[in-house]
Image 1 (tube, rainbow, N blue to C red):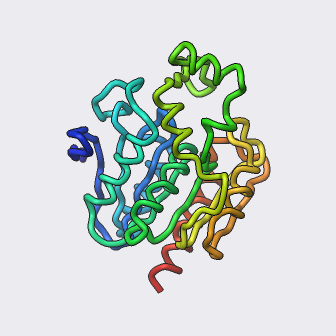
Image 2: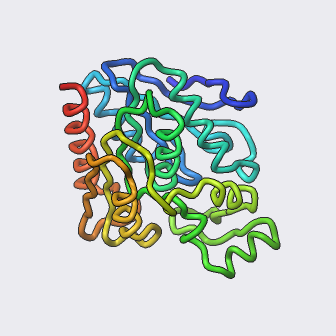
Length: 245
């Protein structure tokens, strides 16, 4: 059952917490996504069957969490993730999808004593840099927002100047990333939104030696086919076994 957590600056965040054995799995959705996506739901079902603690939530302005979507920033959503980490006890394993993969990295840097492992699904750090053309960036700066057709629904994908500038302040791929916990990265070779080279680049920049990148031939950005879900669950199960043995 969903409840609400009071996040930073009084933000009310919808969440669903499932008690169980640790580490607590915390799912971080992608841009304009929510906790009812197929991967989040599948992971929650697995956690239920395995007796594992699981927490999923909606960023402010997304899903069941109140707030104006266009008023949100990457830094604000990072703080929402930190509020979720701080709301549970013990170690936390972050699972981040697309933009959620960027937020999981920022959260791990902010809570190194709490985050015990990371699993990225088409992780998209720095997408405000490489994900927009010069013309798109100019439109965001000059007009304050960019609205483009979305391949995932009828509503356009909107990027505001506030979000874009927030992302530019939090870029990670310019140097070494001081994260020491185990990291697993999954990425489809047919991803039309986040090139698989981003995960390969990220793997090389993470300071931990315990990082694996798995490329899925023909996999798209969502990696939500049955075989992709099985890969995700198997990756998480193996990482938890490593962390708790």
